Amino acid sequence: MKEQNAWHVNGFLALSVQLLVLFAGAVVLGTPEDGDQVFGIILFVIGLLPSGGYVVIQPNESRVLTFMGKYIGELREEGFHFVNPFSQRTKISLRVRNFHTDRIKVNDADGNPIEVAAVIVWRVKRPTQSTFHVDDYEKFADIQSETALRSLASHFPYDSPHDGLSLRGNPTEIMHTFEKELHERLEIAGIEVIEARISHLAYAPEIAQVMLRRQQASAVIAARKQIVEGAMGMVETVLAKLEKKGFELDDEKKAAMVNNLLVALVSEGNVNPVINTGTLYQ
Image (cartoon, rainbow, N blue to C red; front, side, top):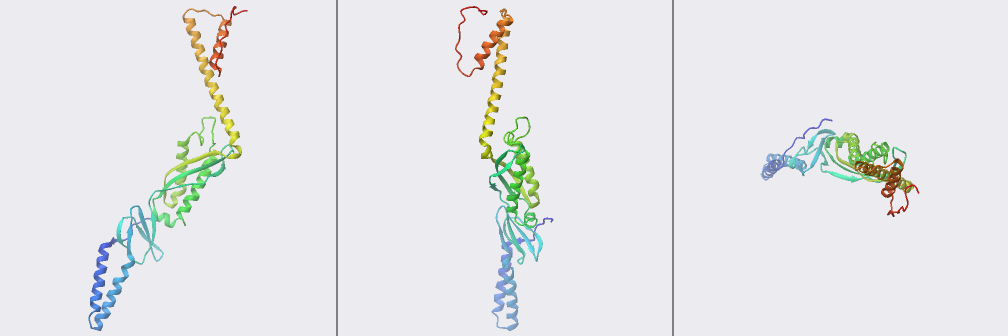
């Protein structure tokens, strides 16, 4: 349905004309002649007919007008207006709204049950579509938002050990994907999605403890790997500097030094030095 502006005139101008007609009708009714009284009654009735045509449009509001079941336009211009007094007017707010979806349980891309919720910021951009394309645009936005959230959560894993997208590891990319899908779903209702962001993300209670231990184990392994790599780099630096300063070490002494340095660098606790009173070979 093509949008169009509804016919309207300044409300104060229309009110002035109406009052003049009513005043003229009252004056004519006051004359003693019967013919003039009939004319006065007609003027008075004509003056009363426009009374239902006045409408006040607040900022960020609109009215969608229909007459005898036919769409005749929409009115967004704020102020006091006069429109077709016999038209039906549907009020549509153009203000920004937001709502928080309920926490829903869904399986992610890896099949793990998770709980997820989102905050949606939206507004009506095309009042005509919101009025005629869907029965209840607010309920439509609510249901489609939950459907899009379920679809999003099922297409990505909660956490990805590789470089792939994940719900927890890539919030910005996930947000853009969510906004795009919501826009496609709500466009038919004339709704513009301003922002869609996941507000709650967690494993379902029945697997939360197990997955937490797995995350902790992964973190420990990653930390250990980084510590070992750093220690190896430091050992290589020490050996290189010793050789540069003229200290010649055979393979066995190098192995012993590497062993001692790695133990000292990698150990979690304080290292207690042991003094060797003999030689390396005793």
